[in-house]
Image (cartoon, rainbow, N blue to C red; front, side, top):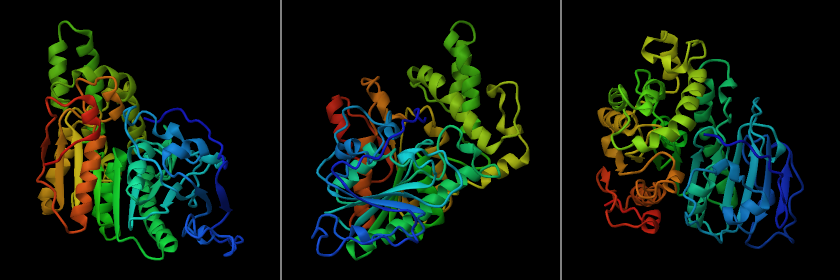
Length: 454
C-alpha cells in the first residue's frame, strides 16, 4: 500500500522549465531563433487540453536514472514495487510535462501543489510512434509506475503518460459524494489523460500516435480492463498486470479478505484448530503453498486493504470487528455501489492479462481466473490472452525476501508487452493462454531478465 509521503521540492537543476498556471493562459513562447533544433523542440507550444496547470521541462534524462536527482519523480511513489536489482534503461532525453486537471480534492502533495488529478507526460526525443498510458497501483501517485513500467517503455521510444487517478492515499475514500465515487473517478481520469496525451503527442511530433497501449498493475490493471471495456476506441490494446476484480456478486477483496482476517490468527497460533483454519483459508481462495506469505500480508496488507475499500463502498458498516464483515449479508445498496465500478468482461480491443499463482493479496482463483472466464462468457475470448505466472506474487519486491520461493513478474510483463506490440500491429498473435512455468534450473539473475511466454 501507500508508503508515508515524502514532500519533494521540484528541482530544476540541469533542466529548462516552462510553467503554465492555467491551460487558458498564453505564456511567452520560446523564440524560434533560440529553440533547440531537435532536443525539446517546440516545448513552449505544447498544451495539455483541459489542464488547469502544466509545467514543461527539457530534461537530459527521462528515466529514473535522471529524474530522481532532478526532482521529476518521487521514489516514495514506487518504493516497494520492484526487485532491488531490476535493470532499467537510461539515455532517454526529452520533455516532461507535469500538471493537474481541475479537481476539488487535495491529497496529492507532489511539487507542493496539494492538488489531485495530477499527471505526468514524457515525450522522448527519439520517438517510436507509440504512446503508453498508465494508472497507478494501490492509492499511489503519478510516479508509481516509473521504475516498473515507465523506464522500460521510454527506453523503447514510447511517449508515456500516467495519472494519480484523481485521489490518493489511505483516505482516498473521502473523495466524492456517494459510495464508489472515488474509484469511479479513477476510470474517468485515465480516459481524460489518454485523450489529452494523444493531443500532446500530436503537437510534439506533428502526427498522432500510431498505437496507444494501456498498462498497469493491481488497481492499474483494473483500469486497463475497464478502459478496454468502456473506451476501446482510444486504445490499440492493453496489458493488465494482476488487475483488481470488481463485480457486484463477487468475488472481490470484500469477499475473500474478511475470511482471511477471521481464520489466519487461529492458523498462526498452531495447535487444535490450525488445520481447519488453513483449510478455511484455502476455501477463501488462498493457494496451497502460499502459507509462507501469510504472516507478512496479515501484518501489512489484509486488514488495511479491506478496511479502506469497505469505507469506499460500504461506509455504513459498523460491525464489532473488521473480520466480522460479510458482504453477502450487506444491504442492496452496497452491491449497487460495486456495480458502479464493476467489470463485465466485454473488452473491445486485445488484452493480455498476467497474474502470479502465489498472489495472496488478490488470490488468482478469485481474480484473474474469474475475469478470464468473464471475457470468454461475453464472447470476447479471441481478444484475450491470459498467462498465470508460476510462483509470482502481488508485489515483486518480496522476491528479494524469498528468492528461492518466488519469481518476479516484471520480466513477464515486459514479455507480454512485446507480445502485445506485435498483436496490436497485426504482425503476430501471442501464444495461447497457459501457466508460465518457473524454470527449475533458472537462477535469480535469469528470472529477473527473462520470461518467455511460448
